[in-house]
Amino acid sequence: MRAIRPAVKRQPASTQSRAFELVALGASAGGIDVLNGLLAALPSDFAAAVMIVVHLPPDPPSYLVESFGRRSSLPVIEPDAGERILAGRVYVAPPGYHMLVEDDRTVALSTEAAVRFSRPSIDVMFESAAWRYRERVLAILLSGANEDGVLGLETVRAAGGAAWAQAPETAASPEMPRAAIERGAVDEVLSPSTMARRLARLPAFTDHDS
Image (cartoon, rainbow, N blue to C red; front, side):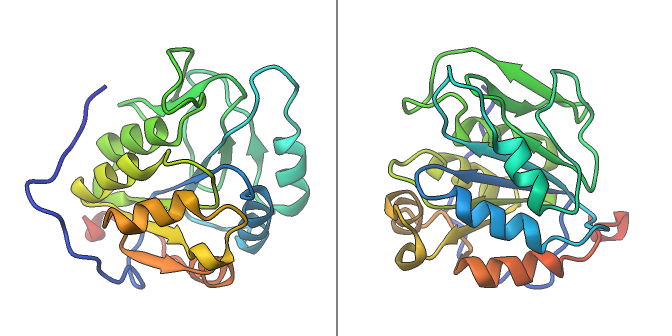
């Protein structure tokens, strides 16, 4: 997999006024309730695409699309390979598949080996999104009990994108966001309520933002 690595660590910076084309969210243990709250806060005219990876067992059916769809004013889908990534739509990784961004802004699904014991992997999604969207991606790491997503956040920031982590004291399983913070891989550490308010107010990305 292509990787982007910084020559030097970028200093954390406020992302308050930035616009993005893609918001990529990763969560594991304790993260579904937070995702429900964030999706509920997004307006029906939300100007970015949303991609979500949640660690799930590969075999049982997933009800995340139905759960998220009841709370979101945006369409929520479990994408097929080749699905175009469109603004104002939520894409949820299917159980047992890595979800990636292709160069033509379509979804790729992979059954390659688990990464950090997880498939889908947050790192895999973040890294592929960084390669394609660069400064136009916002990656958000939520509650979880391992370190998946930390390297992906580093890649996003190295490519010019922005990275948020959930404040560990608000997380049911704080290990994942705490690892990212300790690694220096985030721009901002935010509570779920602050994330929701900030996401709801994200400006639309235009070519003038490039």
